[in-house]
Image 1 (cartoon, rainbow, N blue to C red):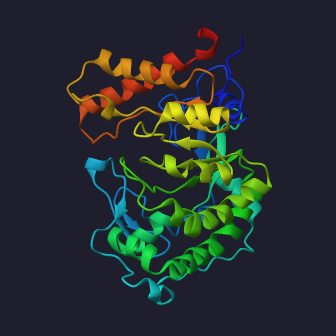
Image 2 (image 1 turned 180 degrees about the vertical axis):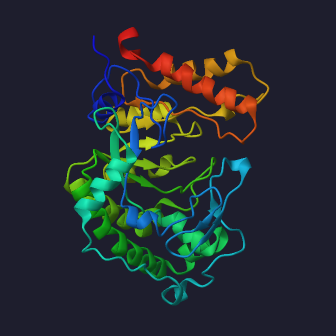
Length: 345
């Protein structure tokens, strides 16, 4: 039997079908063997204005400063104690949408951006992004404590700010989908810790759900399957997420009731993840066999019946050879075990 490509397995799962292999979802990052499941491609005109994801940090397009370091694998965060907004009612004086000419040659830009990405679209599914993380952008502007206070004290001002940013992004999203022709669509917003959500379901429904609806609309109107990245114990919000079109959810951390979620939604919501190093109390003093077993256990728990994709990896500090070895081990074990999983089981 001919092996399915990563894209074929991925798209089959999103259609509610049983694939040949358990997809190894990579959240848009390159894999060691180059056979990526997904990769995000978007307008370079925005990337040129946004340096905050670089290893050295920088500013996002709204003017927020970010910092990064080796310990986090150079994942960037808003610079502590350097927030640009201290009063939500004054956001109009501080937050200014970048000026972008929407009459540029989108067809030429999309062609060049896709060529520069060097993606084999027969192998890898291309996604475009919602570009805005509403809650995370709020706390990037204000800091965590002040951002949470704003949700409770001035909800109408928060709504006005988020809709202002959404007004900026939606025309760009629509142009991106039209000219880049993605296979799917990706949204992100971390709204929970490992123990609970950061705010109530009522606030989610009142403030954030309408924004997510607006950001999801361009994809829903074109029938694109939607993914959503939300860390932590966010199961309280899953009904809402499914309601605005989410088909797969990552990283599906094990603090959620993953088996209960799988039973409730079946293949309508693809659980993507379920593996993480916290599963091993003795980490990092573990044997290779222990690490392999965590991969086997995760896949055997969540893959039966379909509706599952594997994510696994370890943020590696440069020079940490043991962590790099274990990261590679997780990747290789998953590749071997997920390959033709449904034929073997």
